[in-house]
Amino acid sequence: KAGVTQTPRYLIKTRGQQVTLSCSPISGHRSVSWYQQTPGQGLQFLFEYFSETQRNKGNFPGRFSGRQFSNSRSEMNVSTLELGDSALYLCASSSSPGGDYEQYFGPGTRLTVT
Amino acid sequence: AQKVTQAQTEISVVEKEDVTLDCVYETRDTTYYLFWYKQPPSGELVFLIRRNSFDEQNEISGRYSWNFQKSTSSFNFTITASQVVDSAVYFCALSERGYSSASKIIFGSGTRLSIRP
Image 1 (cartoon, chains in turn orange, green):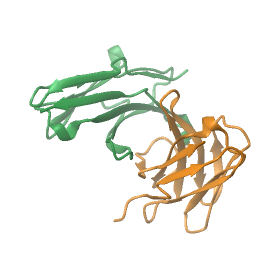
Image 2 (cartoon, one colour):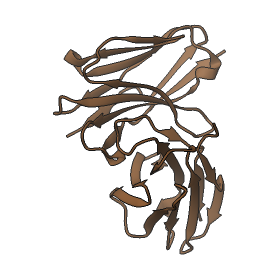
Image 3 (cartoon, chains in turn red, purple):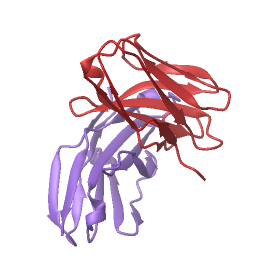
């Protein structure tokens, strides 16, 4: 079974631009969650999607948005990039929503904002 | 409120030594899940174990073992006969059951483990 894939793996953007990151979950998994990982803040929850519906959103500004498609693939978008948005963005899929089940993570997208 | 503390920021040992990574958690709930994940240099978090709060039995998987003690709110992870490939950042995580949301998973700050040849 193929694992979680994320594209692109690396991205360099300048302040003010916008970016779209993509995540394809494990086949059959309908739950996708996004996390931001930085050295200072650690792993922070961004969004959770299940069956195309956003179930929860973390404490991030409205510049961060996401969606999930009918095939469970998910995208997240960050508009008006700031230097502080530089981070590793991790996507995780799970067979069911929620924290009861293990999550399978992708390799992440490393975003650098200059 | 939930909290996960991994007091050991970095650990460095020589190959073949045993090493224990500590995890202490706080929760007011009686039903919860605990997890360990490994993050190698490649970046993705790799699931290692899930334990629910009613199962205090210790678990062994090859060179890995986990000691869950509710009395001390700890869920420690031991690697026996460490190998260079074990070098990674290890995260402990807590989820209070019933919320059915990944947003309720709290990750510790991680322990960076370096195994020297």
